[in-house]
Image (tube, rainbow, N blue to C red; front, side, top):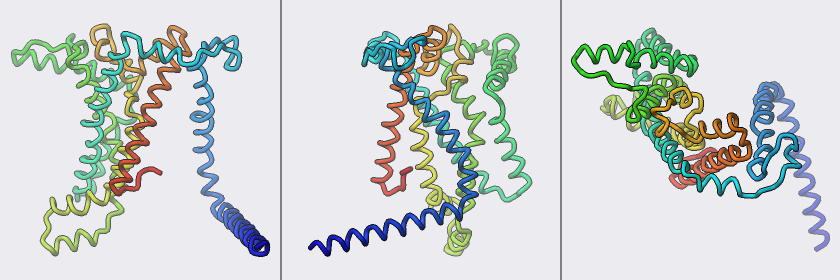
Length: 320
């Protein structure tokens, strides 16, 4: 028995040495690929993982002059305060509704645009269309909101001038609570839908063209090819991006919302992101705002884990 145990240990040791040598060989062989990857890893370590140490503020009564380690510990005090605030349900409702609107109306659009662009056979027209769709992504939210302000303001806005000319009273798009969410989603679609097609177009480029040829021989039309070949080919990409999207489900975009907020639409426009900014930076309640931010992040984590589990149950790969 001792001899067998020693043999197993020796075999395990040899296997570990071989495995380590293969790992080192792979690192040396692909050293330039790892070198290219290094700046991205460094970025995430410095700007994503290291700042997570600051989450300790959510459980402290943080005082800048005392630092993280010497500030008094208060446990779940800030979370209790947040959940009992009169504004909590207003913030929760506004954030959830905007997130659902973005998920329902914005997320499918890049897929649809990618499928439409994939059907275009004229390369010049396709390149021109892609350029027009990509351009808004490079416009800052300040400029994008400014463009919409010029178009939709009641004081000389192009849209309201046209509405008035056909005999309809001017609509306060920028001040109305009823129009706020529509404006937010419309701006997001205009700015980012085209850019979102890039990943799906890349996935579509990997579809085997012989499948289309075989389907045409069998008498399948464009719609049949789309349903039975194109969509299944990019289904895993759609699932992965959907899971990642759920990770930022409550991230409605601080800058965008903040630029559109005013005293007339704040009741429907105030979300977790703008609330954290108000409490944390303008009022100096660092610990409280950290607790709100941590709550939002935990919701995103639960959604990612749940959706990934569901995707695996349905036979998809998921993200891990």
